[in-house]
Image (cartoon, rainbow, N blue to C red; front, side, top):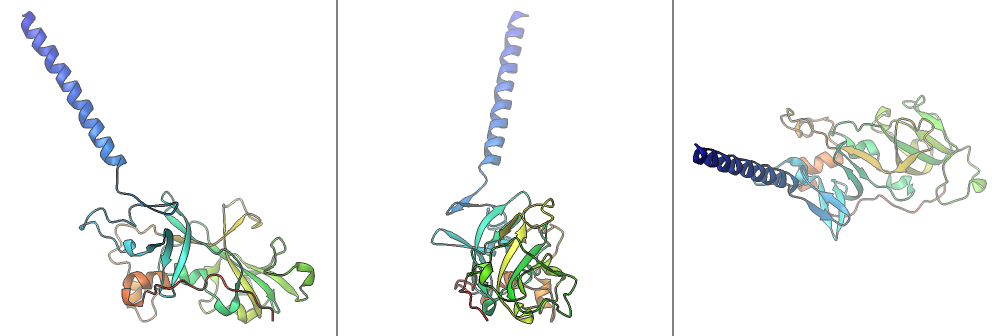
Length: 255
């Protein structure tokens, strides 16, 4: 009887050790999912394919060049400043004011992707007009932002700064030149609490929260007038994807 008890104890100990080994192996495998760093940004699924059978169109969304991460578009490469894998958004940075001559709308960058948690916005500078036939209710005066390349006291134009809170509400063909604006900035709100837009950051949010049940995210690019922006177009039509840097930072000229 005592021998049987000893054998039982040994078997129990072996079972516990085996259970712990399996648990450790599983947890290690989960923690060591493939990752890659481009500069100080970490790339992981869906931007990295774990194997040849796990390919996603979003693998083509970014490009690492000289340890700098870029958002690939048919207009060129736009720098990415951060990626949030929890909210499934990335930030296409906009480091300075840009001339209206080289306007790239946040809506054009994000068209075809899901709407981000908070809308992308637009700051317009040194505008001669405020009203626009399709955007009168979406454009407001703003006074809390620095001017583009010149001190506020030197600006004699009636509308030195205008804010478009939600760029998706504008007509797709809107251009700062419609209001005779000389410069612009792409911005986004940090949180819902920033109602006065005092807490904004430069750049545009792009959502990569693509539901699993979507059969083909490129369907919009197959339609004659589909919602296919320059980023999605680059994913769906590789031949239209430009490798040069996009016009994201240009010198401001005053009208």
